[in-house]
Length: 472
Image (cartoon, rainbow, N blue to C red; front, side, top):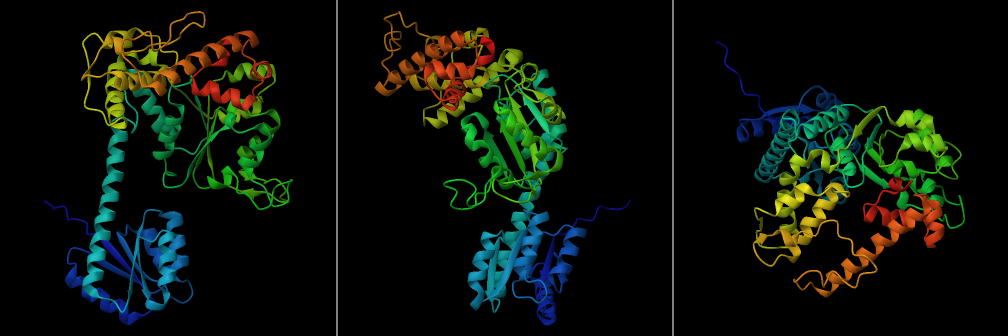
């Protein structure tokens, strides 16, 4: 029977001095007997070796002919962003080495080399690479087990969602995440990115309603100096910032129609054109969009382009409302209980037997975000170790005609700022509900009635998890 031979970690030595390479290889054969050592005489050969086999640590000189260590480092991290690279430098080039650290090198050593110190650094580098591999394998195990990091829930509905997230993460297709406010659409987008091959590259979240319409285009695509009054320097847009990674356009339904046309071009051609630029430039970006709006209805109304909709919905995910995963509420509540305790540096608390009943019976219009806020308030205002039913303020709404206040409706004396904040929250919720009822959910009309800007009103709606579509 053939025994499995353990795979030794590999160190790659890169230098254009043959004597140094052979000397280091002989030294490491004695000092690091459980490591395989391979060599390359220049940066290009090093890149070829990295493309063909797994290398634990690269030890490379900065000053090399043809392709120097910095250029080689940049090329390594274009394809292997987590590769452990240690650079060798002479005393006169320490500034270069510090620059290399900023560009992704893990460490550097100075010449003449001190072998004991170098061996210790390489051992730490080997430990780092091993840890990265363990984390990578753990992530694969988590994926294969049917769970997604950061998500809580074991119901059949959540298991199906995990499978969909993992399937989406395995592709580069444009993805549309739909669901009511507070269901975790942003968390879903981040999970797709973190489980994808783009995880080491940027994830850029764009809150579309929070950016004024007249600035949204320049923020997304950037601009050149002199493009408009006040453009005193070039500005890199969010698409360019996300190059190589993922951009999530939150509340895509609120993007104005004229900008939808330009966004369509990005999807079709993978090109952006900054304001004031004469030519377009290519970007490698995976686009995820999210919305709580009825995009099909917006298409009928003429406020959303159907060709953009079909470009976005190559893959589609629906985030379940909390009432759809009610069996996960105890699990979520206990998770948020521990989280809130850590946030508030509070002693450990638990739910009483009767406290879970109202959580299960509530209709949760604000979904998971509302549940989390309810638990936070309960932890804050519960003086003892057990959270009772009376500490759970559900669906809080105090009529303007009533003289009762949040302070008077509970025997627990709240801190002044907390009580004041609840009064302000109560007023804001009632005002916005009345405003949307009067405007029949039309945000532009509601903004005019309230004398708020459209962006400011959208920000309030998001803060309080209020969906204007229910008033249409």
